Image (cartoon, rainbow, N blue to C red; front, side, top):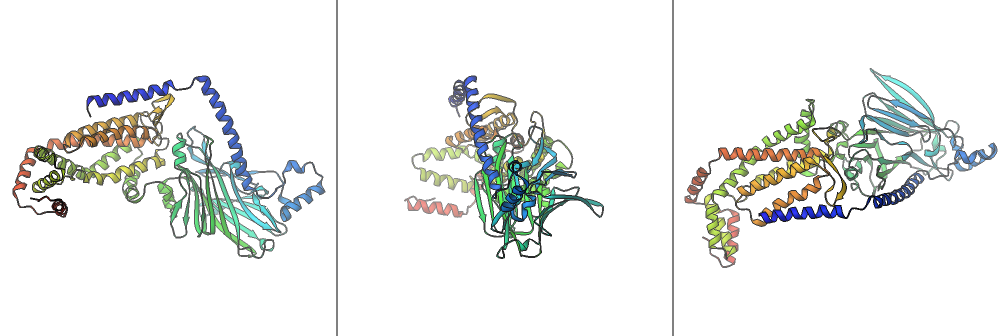
Length: 615
């Protein structure tokens, strides 16, 4: 790239920034637009929330304020007409039961007998508030029953709580039982239990003598589970883009809906579990055996800046018309921590985006084991990334050296290649033929510098997936970065620059600068690169500047370190590699008899078909 091109790029950048500042609205216009957006968001949120909540209660449950205007006999009759055998539990006072262990605080509600909220004690959101999953009335956990031609939802009915502790060996297991009466000796029951060191919550569903109420042809009942996923991270765009509904079939295949988009799916075979997954946290409902088919899963985006998505699942619970029907399941409310999920041996760790194919394998069998070992040393995560970079660079050293050696061979042969190019400048086919013949005689592979680089690509892409998904980096500070899992900002701009953002990430700037420096030195050493390719090699880092500006600071920091160590390795190779000796060796190779490769044979065949006679 010449001086005029550099000046042109700088002028274009200054024009873009100047245009953004000039076109920025006045403070009065900004305030007016904000009021308009807030009003629109409030209306849309109200509509979305009402639709979400209305969907969870399909029968007309009588509310307390409506009944308060009626006398007792009318109240009783109204409840009996609407709720049949559940009339006695159709109204009441919502009570909350709180049970804690070392990792989470679980709040149960008597209204619906459900988990009302789960606070993860070791985690805070980006504002410093506790991370609370399945929060309040934004979550639903209910059965849909057909009783005497009425569809009854348990979400609006009032359960009777029972709290107890059971000692199993040295561990005290806390249990909460929620029972819903359906008349004499008939009831529905949720029995919840969990130990002291676990993110799981057991839930056993029991239907006692309910077979006399449900139609004889009933072979299953519907269990609906819904959550409104709240925002926990600074970069809501990245958090939403990493959110999806996951599910695992009984044959251990794991799949998911599209990330960050509206979607729904009817699962036609039995399902082991369904997860409402966000960037760093997940809520999972797991069957002890399996949920029958079908299972309906759905995700809907929300425009509220404090919310991510509405997620829901409608499960099919088998019902055998026995006097005592029981179905075992459990919840997981916790972090997307690879080792924690993997220990459950349910494939839950597949929710973590480590990349497909070879990229995921590199993360699972190379990056994660090294990272976990360094993490066990209890050192700062910035230092861990530094050591990880050194280890990876050492592992890649043979490939890096091979690539550099191939480039050195190409450099010493450049004068002779230039002569061939000048001699056959008007005949591209003949020029290519002569070049390949020359490389064959010298014993040089012109792609020798590219192949080792391609072999390093899986690690680079693996890291691109690893850092944004690593909960270990969440809210861990290093130097000026307060959270290595999201972008670092040394300056928040009062305006938005298209394709860049409204902040300046210093780690991204350092990564870009080091990449440009690495590119400049590489192009100087790679004589065979054409001008168009050199231009693209300079342009790509500038394009990535806007992309990485909102990405994980840990990722940009890793790429910066990798570039700097790469430059150091190149200068070290220059010290040990004697190009004059390489040139003498290549000249000796040219005097030896050469065998033609399959590629050379195909090239010469093409030449003969065009009328050329190969040497």
